[in-house]
Image (cartoon, rainbow, N blue to C red; front, side):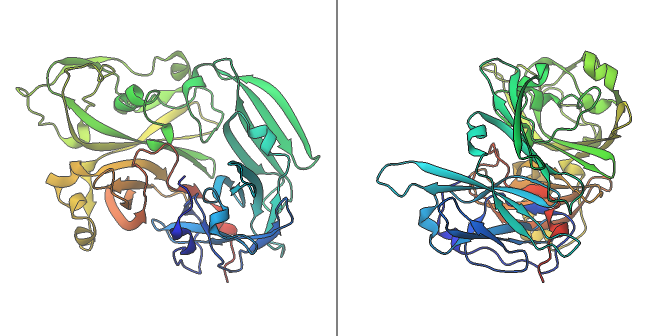
Length: 431
């Protein structure tokens, strides 16, 4: 999340008819823009503050605005930020500059609740007791209780401790307005950085090889994995850059070759067999891309080793909460993609031309939350380019559905997401 700049004065225009699910930019704009989603409250200093949301049809990105009459954009240390959103709720952080000569940041937290079905207007509530529970923040989540029209919610904060794999779980229940804290041990998951948690018998499928090699040291899982649960069906998607070692034999563990993963095998770590394969310039790569093995191994950082990147691939998995297994869905390679709209070649010719496709840097797969087999990808021609594109891909048909431009001044491999999937739009009334 970058510091506030002049762009905060100009939030993009959006549609007045909100879709059921959106891609939401977690970084807000400081601007006075009004619609029926507007909700107001007071800061800790008694200053009136308002929040409004502006929904757009994916793959276009939706936005939100924050306005305070007694403050301007230069009073904000950073852009307002949504740190979590679930159903009709959004938890918003404001980072304000201290009004003294000393440097420092004053953070305040607000809960935005969209309008209810019984005529309840949207609301904005300050959460004064939250800040002290975020000093050792590892992750945070909030969920409504008793249905989306209920006023009550549960907020959970996962706090770091000095013990590896051990956390303090802070839980706030609005119904009794009390915080509780207990110690939790996560074991093998301690090295992970969960952004979505669903309790399952055996956990998630093993990472694809290149991601497994890079995960702890370089990239956060939200850059190559996403998970959604719609109507009791859990869907997981993973994207992996495909590399070809050019010099010697390697050992790989490729989960994409398995059709079904059972929980008991995942728990024991016996879900995938190892396989030795040899790749080099004297053995050219001629297999079909849809049947490609990963040409990458855990020794990728050894000095002197050389690789050739030839694109990326997507792998999807599905299951229900009650089942004890994951079932493999679609396997899509970059070179499998089909473009049916001739306008795409003018918008992003590097993605349409097969010889130039491997130059596209792609990450952050976001699974559609409306039940369709659509994945949204953040793509750039160059990593430092601020002009990114969000590409909507039908993983079942291997078709590029739509493209949308997106201003992204960060690296394509940033640790925080450029946008988040959100069902908040389903509850918004922008008329």
